[in-house]
Amino acid sequence: MTSQSPAPPQSPAIAAFLRGVERRARLLAHVQTGHVATAQRALAVTAQVFATEAEQWPIAQWPLQYWRLLLSVPAMGQAVVADGCPLPAIAQLPAAARAAVLLHLVVCLDESDAAAALGIAIRDYQQRIRDALPRDRQGQPDLAVWRHWRDAVQQALEAADAPSDPDIDASATSTASSTPPMPTARASTAPPPPAPTAAPLPPPHRHLLRWLWLGVAVCLLALLATFFLHPRGRALLSAWHNRVRVEPLPAAAAPKATFDPADPANDPDRALFAAPQALLLARDLPLLAWLSSLPEPLSNAAPATVAPAPAPAPQWNRADLRQTAWLRGAMAEWQALTEAERSTLRATAAQFHTLPLAQQQQLRQRYAQQTFDAHRGWHLGPQLGRQWPRIAPLFAYVDAGERDALLQLLRNASADDTDTLARLAQITPPEARADLRRELLALPAAQRSAWLQARLNR
Image 1: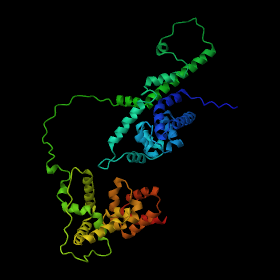
Image 2: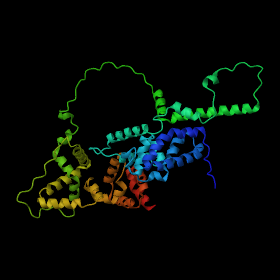
Image 3: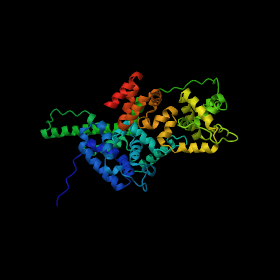
Image 4: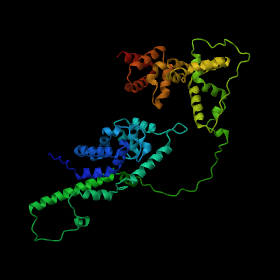
């Protein structure tokens, strides 16, 4: 019968670090795996690997490497059941989003360390956090749900078996308990009594004393590492570094004017109120762009006795925030068009509203049957709408800071340049599209055609 080989001995610093992260690691592993037993096995494996490899990293990198090792355990990427989980709302998230949220709320890692622990870019980590949250009425991430998750994490940590918030003294005490006894501060600083006739210590005792002081130094290093790695320690150090002088401000003077919410001049949408017909055209911009690009002209094959009146201009309802945001976006798309495009769409709208209602409905149904990429393209107007399905793979997902410059580039592109971009969209892999767009924007306008041909032929 063979005996199991003992685990490799841990240094006091490694043992102190593992005790410091145990409570948060246990909660993260429980929520990420969904089972207490599976979480315990993942923690044991991570601790064993970390203790073996920790000496090759600087102490400042220990937190990043530990959480990277823990999340690399296969059980951390599986779907879980929220029943019995201390954080059921977070446990219902997909595995990737769940890990990102737990690193932020449970471990309190900053964005760069959390992204490195997951092996992804910082903006991809930020996108996982945004995708994990439900949306509010304005279509933005619901911060109330985020605050609820944060409070639930704090309650789960306080209810854990380990101490609710181990302070620096507790970490120092637990570290010291694993090393030989050390002299107290009073004993180490008091001068020794005079003993001129005392015999020197024999060599074995001097050797033991050197090891004792080495143990003291290791414990002090572990204490400092625990202090700087603990969130409370970092907060105390930051508060001490950022101390400011507080003085009462003088009494404020009376305001020269007050804000009147009923004054139309103060309404942020006052320019839109003054242009109801333009707002009506903006609302139907994609439909009108498609109609203006049809090969057959709009004709009233069976004219009605009385031409139907255009649809009334949309009314602003401050209580419906979603509709307000949609109308603002529609007006922004209308204003981004050239004056020639807007003139074309006005003429198309006039022809469209002279058609019988049945024919108008038939045209709307034909428009609705197009693909998603085609729909998105017609929001850009008739010029880009015709070409958009061909170039959509290259320009569908861009950074907000590049959007206006890329739209201007596409509007000014020649037919040959558009054909070249369409071919590049088919052969450029997704991971190389962002670099292609940045290089294209960095070129002067006169050099872009030659560069596109060279890129296509390389």
